[in-house]
Length: 457
Image (tube, rainbow, N blue to C red; front, top):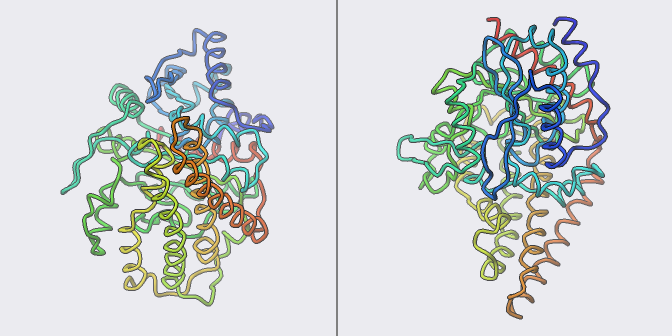
């Protein structure tokens, strides 16, 4: 990379906390006011709850690049990367000329959901505090998973307002390169690409090794996702989830699938856009990178985890079923948890684990750790939302006495289950909290390498 790009990486501030939505919007407006000849402030649209979603257009390069943060509202690493990157672009003409893109930047796409995560943004950064204030919407209300799709018997056209705004922008600018700033919660670094580009993979690994963060070498996020190289996955749309469920005999696939397709699938199909993702954790345990063999069969480990999930889901179902008659049917936590109770995907995964030859080999220790321990971290997030669901419901003034009693009892049980699992994971996981500056550096370096490769190829 050129010196101007290394200077950019070496100047990442030592961020100690994440910005709120109001702080980000204030920063964007200030940058546009300070550099009116370079930076244009625009409105992507309104959120479902009426918040204005701001964007920045920076530079006049030969190709268009789209970069957006918070495609999921619990993923603010990209917002801090964009704080640094947008200011550097505005200030540094050499940087703009070197990259030669016209940048369209949305720091926070899911504004409504982001506000519901603000309880943990300023710390303390522990899995206990994170899970207690975590929020993520149901699939069919996720900004990056409600693009329209028609595939076989599956049809989705319930495009929410945030998605429509991004879709309109994509249709207008037809980006050559998109950087979707996702991040994971626990593990190591991994990447998604919308086409196989092996020429850059070693350089992507260097970006995370340079910051002493391991690659995530456990299981892919979903079993249907193709693995192109260690910690590099192929990003595809909802059609591949349909095909996986169909292959392994799932019934009523159209009821199991709850969302549309994603922005990268939409952009690739319509405009040939290359989309890149760098997935980063807040917390990591070095076991996620251990590629030595365990003494367990990979499929058996998957089935053990599915059995644990079934038991955990039974607890969720009991409390959700008891609470639902006294809740707003559109409560955001209720909708998410009801989706988590759908079991068709588990049935397909069991069949895969038992029959697919790839799952009859020995699991690596990383795969065991990921499947049996890290997956419990994600169950902890559901328990945190179960607590918040009950708390929200109990705020209603018109609750009947019976409902208040049931919800109070449910809240006590939800809190106890969340606290018990949080305590176990805090004790069992030898995790470290990754500094925000480290995460920004990885995401920025990997993104620069991907965008320059795509620009120049």
